[in-house]
Image (cartoon, rainbow, N blue to C red):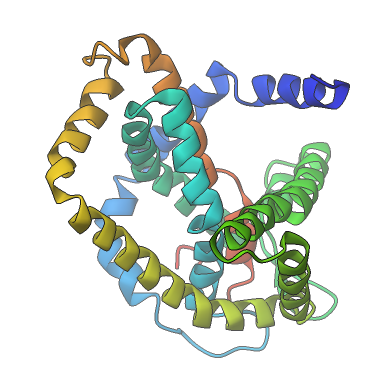
Length: 290
């Protein structure tokens, strides 16, 4: 193992230590309890609010914000993440990913609402915000806000897109024999055209592409389930039995199942990660909870 790999491994062990895994679960549970199950109670209102509330040059619509965040929550990282969780944590990790998704929705609601409540207008007259803003303005912890901002630039801004693009390029190479460098350059050029137009163009492109992507994603999942319908009951049984150590084969890795389920749950849903809240802050809406 190289020196760089040792540094990454050390940081990973600290960032995803057991206390932080527990903290992610407890935070979701606390917000779920405190807000009386807001992610279940107001699900009907959620669908109603996906319709554009109004047109305003200062921000993007709630649906555009939704589509933009879905673009990062459903995709290559999600597919690879589930496979990684099962490989290291066994089938039981899937159950804990479900748990994290359900209670993490409350965390996502809170961080997005806070992003709206503490958003500001930048020099161009557009809404901006996110965890860095409400950490500074609400908690008055500017050093922590700066640390979050730096981590966001390095993570979602630089490192994570590279990981996703590598997965896409590798897939095109295996499936169609396309050269990975060519695929990478094409995708980088398309990405540049979108992001250089600012948050408005990102929102406009996302509201066109994300729904199509989600529909294809769901159709593909349904087709795969139908093709293997005989194995579905066995798969569910394996997930639940290994999640609690009832399955002798996976009984010794219950802790790993919980840890990997929570880790991948955070990564795939972004609940508590903060990046989704940055997009939510750019929305022009009449109330932060919307």
